[in-house]
Image (cartoon, rainbow over all chains, first blue to last red; front, side, top):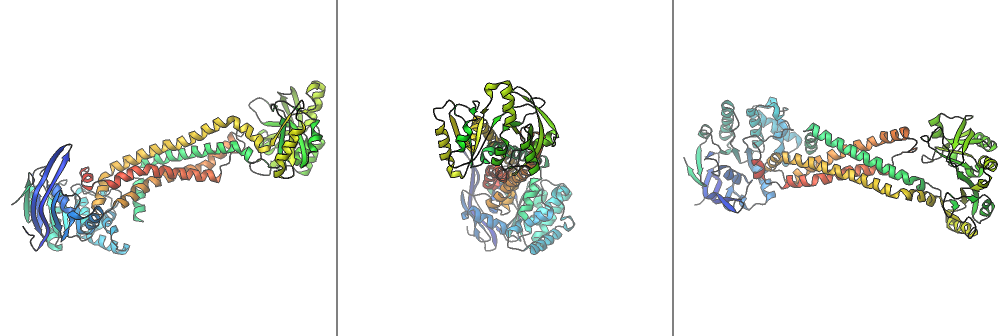
Length: 229
Length: 385
């Protein structure tokens, strides 16, 4: 199976297992699939099916036992820890279920974090941060700490942080899992805008069928194997 | 700059915990500094002793006297510039709680040998002229409100009776380390009284102070003096003033070593406490460290963050403790003057205090830094939620 020419993510024969004591628990077994540039893909499946593991592998925060993962032409399975860190810094944006904002930093500073790893000047960083906070509708909340923001607002800050470096792909692990319905809707609309207006590729793990409906493509994982719906 | 801001914000994240750690380090550093100062002061008498002064005493023990007739023979030893003599009087003022050193000395020669005891010319001549006169150190005078012309009565312990004397001068030390809590009076007053009351104890001195031309001559002069009185009824032991002081200090050496060990233990204990606090902090922030790594931050960045916080907290406490050492030392000097007439903190002690705090920060930061820097991202992220 060869990669499609417009695929931004190309996975081949990917396997991953965890070791618990003497026991080896296979999570993913020989998975192969592509994700096209600008696509919004939802990964669904029961708990323990390997959705988050697959997301982590694509995002380069976990290592595969075997197989290949190419993201925007870069084979990431062969990269060292430091190379992966550098690659993640400019190629992947992360959106977490519990936002994962740093509580002692303001919304502005949280969004600025990934830019500290770039060569941008302070003024340029400020411009970038202000721009993305405006996109997510939080220009007036820049100096607020996470504890002063609602769940939905915190997730929007997390999205702003994910896109501030203009990465190729965004990975989202249950981005609406900790939000009420209205806030979840807002976040999904925002993600939809990122795909349609900014051309981002989003891979989202979710349990929520209503969240998955927003995606262009839903893939199911069960017992380490992938199916499309 | 951002990292610095981040470290400072993290420091005050759990205010109570950070404040308690800072206070803990400050108190430990303060205790370390005061204990070190105490040990240093214990040896300071010996360290500030003159290299051109020798002490001659009875070879058997300091409590045995020497005949005053040795004076001229010691004076005749080549290299000797001046000889004085005296006795430890051991008098009590009011009661035993009011302790201070008091000596009966040959005044003119003694003051010549101790130029660091500064008196005005008038006070000096008044003291020398009055056989029942005495001089007192300025700190001692301040303690009891004595001034020139006051009558001081000491109750003798070694030499029984009430010994009345008139304050003829208040001396000031030339150096900060000069002892200013001593009373000196005429040896003749003691000797003449003894001649009348206990004649067998008269004409005897407890020690001779011998001035030498150059420090290099001290060993030869000491050997010559002891040689002169070898095989006599009262053999002598002559040693430098430093060695003389050290013979007293060495009696309490074990206590001083114990105090030094305690001072290091204090630092070791706070190190364990600080390490536990930092480990707890790092464990709580595992998810954040994983998030930062996810965003592309490397182990080095996290190291700076965790290590920086550990060092900053300890240094903050250390500087507080070091600064607090000065008022604490001043308080000891004023409130416990009878035990510590001079309690000055040296620059070396302050440096050691800050270095000890730095060491606490470095050691207590090592393990949490290692844990934070080596955390697996996926594993760390699983801890959130």
